[in-house]
Length: 337
Image 1 (cartoon, rainbow, N blue to C red):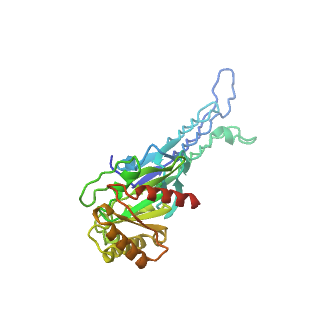
Image 2 (image 1 turned 135 degrees about the vertical axis):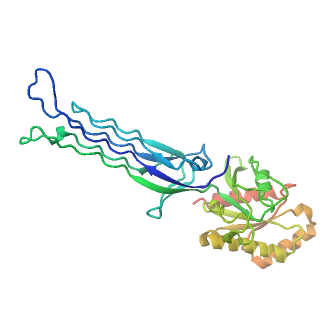
Image 3 (image 1 turned 90 degrees about the vertical axis):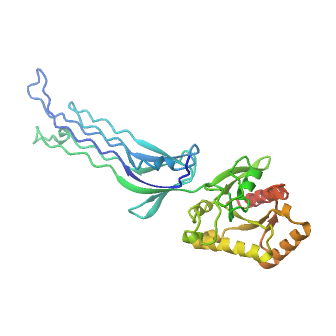
């Protein structure tokens, strides 16, 4: 299934049914009065979030969603049938933007959360309701009102506690594979990850967190180079960003430059995201000596300051991975706000 995280669709609630024009015509009732009933209300249209979906692919081809119209009023003062509501299921984490208002109108994060996106029209009035002491045989009725119509943009943002950020082949997918049951595609060529993936990480008997792997960035991504920054939105809900850098055959200047380049892409996308708590994760320590590891970590700490958290791991041998998972879990528990 293709991963679609943005869609443009049109929404139309049902129209209200027209009021009925009718007079009683019954045997043995010589002076039958007006008995036209009111029209039924149009159906409302709702969005409802569900964990069963993880993409907006439903909206790739279908672009118009319409609730049922209300029925016309009937004789004998019978109200027309109400239009059936339409409930559209969307993945958890879906944000709804009204294109005309140019603003966000909903953020559906919780399982089963619903949102009324378009209200159905009111039913029209039948001629029975217009009867008065001076007008015993009214021929007046009213039409049902139109249901609300909206053009909206849907944007899916993954619900994750931790986000992985790095250049292609830094080892992000390998890390997700090492710490969770998720099985993202792994290979030794750029842009292996073409869609975000989620993994659930158990860091204690009763504690876990969700980690998100997004496609790798390259310098200039904010200007449309490579895969661009279309997937950075999936980091917006995370509480912690892990910047993963491959340190094999790289000196400290290159490592720090890669980190700075990643931060620059974050800043170009969203300044608040660049201010999010970030840890530097140096990967592939299995390919260098212990002495080289110590030199790189010491140099990185001097360049970045003592406040920067730096971890060294190998996603192949899993050295340092368990300690990283435990520290991430503890951090999230302490910053659960």
